Image (cartoon, rainbow, N blue to C red; front, side, top):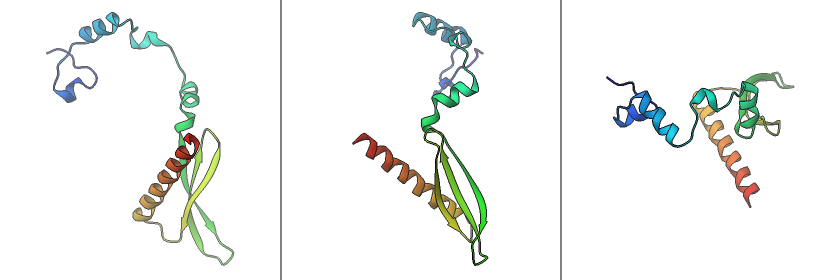
Length: 114
């Protein structure tokens, strides 16, 4: 049985590696390893506009209440967003906070495009 490549198995298509190589060669595209060697740092720099890092941390208020804070940093701008804080962390709260973040980010993209 020929070796399957890429997304072809998902589509139910069987294709040998040599067939893929021929298609790429005919299109003038070098094999994967010959296309260039980028480092992890190069990849991160090229994708910085789209990368977010998020984490939770705990803080104690002046009244002694403990809160779990959801924070996100945008790598490109190094902007830190405090998405929310809650005394009772739950999956439902995290999902809603993430949805709010995505809507906020989409609004920022729309504002820049105008």
